[in-house]
Image (cartoon, rainbow, N blue to C red; front, side):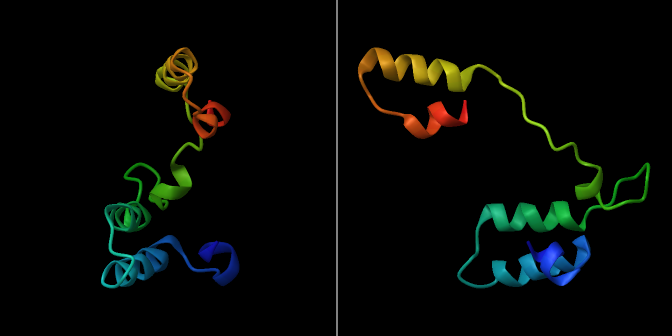
Length: 83
């Protein structure tokens, strides 16, 4: 969102995240996001976030969780939808 609405480059967005980490948004996710945004790919010289593949794979744990929840009669609709 920051990149599309402000035209900030990833390093500048990393600085914004670092500022957020100093306040109420202090969290590990904000910290690691800033590190990723600041990192450059060694092979291409591009921001790593632009080189990073935008994919996810099924490891089976979500399916296993949903199957077990069904056996126990426990609702896990959020996980089921994600799987």
